[in-house]
Image 1 (spheres, rainbow, N blue to C red):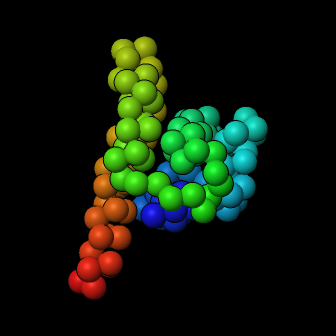
Image 2 (cartoon, helix red, strand yellow; image 1 turned 90 degrees about the horizontal axis):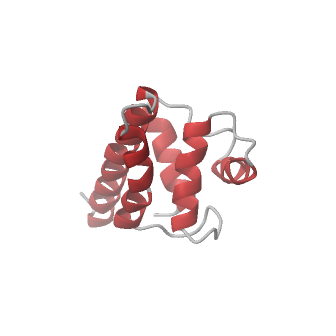
Length: 110
């Protein structure tokens, strides 16, 4: 799955405003620090970093996508971290699994 496909799926299936424009624009804004939602920007930056900063068409495997968010998960599990961040990261991780499950089923023709 490409980073663009994953970001589109997350936008459509999490209930969060993850994107600010297209996936490519959101990746750029997150990198530049101009994305309007800081937690979403952190998530996008982590995924983009794991994809090698190769743009939205870069391929990203499930395990890499989930692992890229591990530091954010720990950050937002802290007692003094905003609950919104924890909920968002947890929902994103769960939805990443769903995205790759759906892709696997589609590729099998199911």
